[in-house]
Figure 1 (cartoon, rainbow, N blue to C red):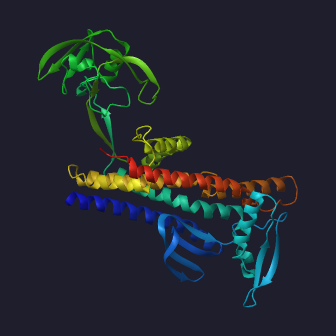
Figure 2: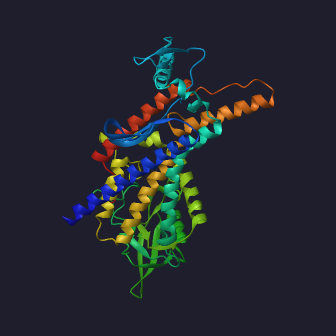
Figure 3: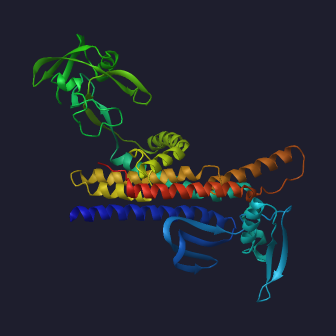
Length: 453
């Protein structure tokens, strides 16, 4: 009963934290937009049907039924197209002037752009002329669009800073000195299948046959004194399928075992997962927990490493999502390091909080790091320079600034505003991918979830 309650608590805390993060992300857009004189008509958390809303001034604040994102509506994001579109002023039922955009019907993509402009300009009145987003200076557009993801990265920074400064950054490292064995495999399992139980078809591991057991300290390998795990690892790998005499200490007594290493495909190194045929014994070293504490500079350094890892992960994201899809239909096992949705994050949070055998501080830190990690990923992801992501608008505003500056240098007329509407076909493709990715990951987190155990 207590475990179930703790699991639920973990899920609720994680979901609420993500919703708060989404809300702060949208505030990161809305506040500078209003400060720069822009008109923000809507601020919503979620998508779909409106659950609750309230009007405050010219902005409607509310919550929608599907809590998988949020948005702010800034009037005038798309400029009118001079070539394909023309404005016309009509009167509504109350006699007020309304600016409408006449649509063009030449080609599918042109029609999509035309429809988007028309929908945008249905909200624009004559009084909004000086407050349209596309008319803001490029640097203001960049500040508005960068505000959202920057808030997520700031949230991550504050959480990481709090953890690193108090609890510390804890990592597992191989203990220094003569290698002490932590685990001994009973059988030889192919790389990637180490988690499963041994079967009658699996050959016995050489280390197990030689009599090695957890806690043994290796003294020498084939007559070569061993002083550290890296040395022992290289001796084993270079031994191929040759004979091996291992001298080790157990309870203060020196013993010896004889076996033959076997050849197995294993990663070239800890950082390179390219498989290479090498000698295999079947032991892992004892590891110790190293704690490193630091302040803001240390936190920035760690986040720099995280940024590189995140960019590398984003480069392979489509492939990883595809692999999750294959796991859903049973074509392969799900990679424990595969991406997860908010549903998967909630499950991990619930599992973490309900692990009563671990100290409360460890569980709390894991939950905080999970929340920080999601915020950091959301922030970096939104800076990708593709519409409809924030980075797409930043790239558009940056190009506008560069184009105008170059025209001034060359003494040419101002080229005008960059028309982000022309990139809408790309935005629809990216949005479709994001939708498919979200559905695949949510189904994967329900059918073949990533688990801590």
